[in-house]
Amino acid sequence: MQVNPQHLDTRRYARCIEVSKRVRFDIERDVIRGRKLDFSQKFLPDGLSKLGALKLLSVGERRFASQIQGRTYANMFGLVERFIAPKVLEVSRQHWLGDQTAFEALVRFTDEELKHQEMFRRMERLAAEGMPAGYTFVPQPNDVAAAVLSKSTWAVLALICHIELFVLGHYREAIEPDAALSPLWKDVFTYHAREESQHAILDELEWMRENGNLTAAQRDQGVDDLIALVGAVDGILQMQANADAAYFRASTGKEIEATFLSAYRWQYIVSGVQDKRFNEILGGMITPAQGERIGAALKPILEA
Image (cartoon, rainbow, N blue to C red; front, side, top):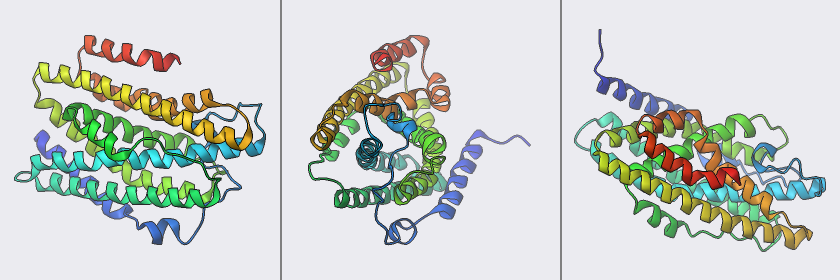
């Protein structure tokens, strides 16, 4: 029997609900469990921190640099989820009087993102307990969220899909295989990835649905907005890399700002734009000329 594509989509939304119920966690009961961060171990794995090859640093200095990056990593996700949750809640409006399965899936998605924000606030407090004073997370979450949400829905959904696909890639390829991470830090991102795996599917469904509603001119504007968003992300990364390098320098006297910036560009931009699934989805929506515009905008970041 041939199945209507809308029914196929409904089944995908339903599957996300099913898995969401199965993997749902409580921050204190399941993740924190009364534990503290272990500062004798790394936070961020070498595959993300890009610190393994830095011979000028001692073992302890590389560990401290990974803890700075890991602290920022948690804060960055708390930041992006500030705009992800309201955007998902906004697009759920399209299902209010329609597909209630899709509506439920997006409401659960929003609820989970709000929980993740609280989990990352907990991580910041735990990191502050064991690290030297002076760390600063530069971007203001509400200001960043307002700026992102001012762009077209197509572009914001593209950015969100990009983020949540690289979350899964980071976990599979770098975090999960590394046995030398602080157990609590690793558990936070294990539980985070379990819920994000459903979010990535919903991102794709909603982005493609939005794409199908646009005119060619609206989609072209979306491409411009996406390019602007990536540029804004890079500006944030440059500011945070400078702040984190200054914090590291204050404790060690060593300068590694270029390493921080290279790592942050890899973590939050490059690993996502090189994700196979992201490229398949985006490539199916845009023209070759639009793809060239995006490539030209990314070229300085990729070359750096």
